[in-house]
Image 1 (cartoon, rainbow, N blue to C red):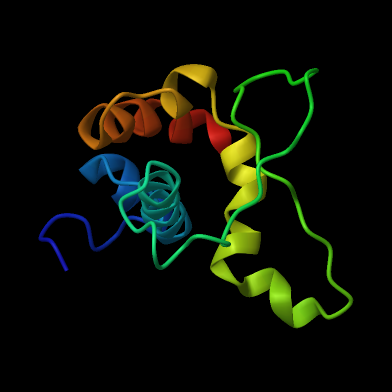
Image 2 (spheres, rainbow, N blue to C red):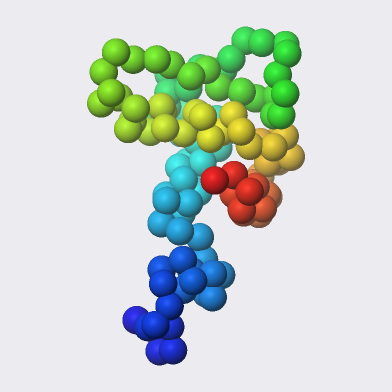
Length: 115
């Protein structure tokens, strides 16, 4: 515990320290891994991991991913399923980033409004 913050609630401590909540930090890591998969960093490992949506009428970013549906609720916790909805909601500037470092900085701005 950091001195002087013991009396504050979890949300107030995070705000005081300038940090995201645990859920946002997990999502941040997942979206960075998805960016790396889609840019080809793990081509062999993740070849069939994501399916690009075939639609000309997309709002927001132009690199939308297809959301798969499963009969079992167990699958909605899988990486490829839980990331797609959030990826599709990212702004075009973040998705079209030329490098990982640029994506990270744009993702920080997008995540403050995403959840």
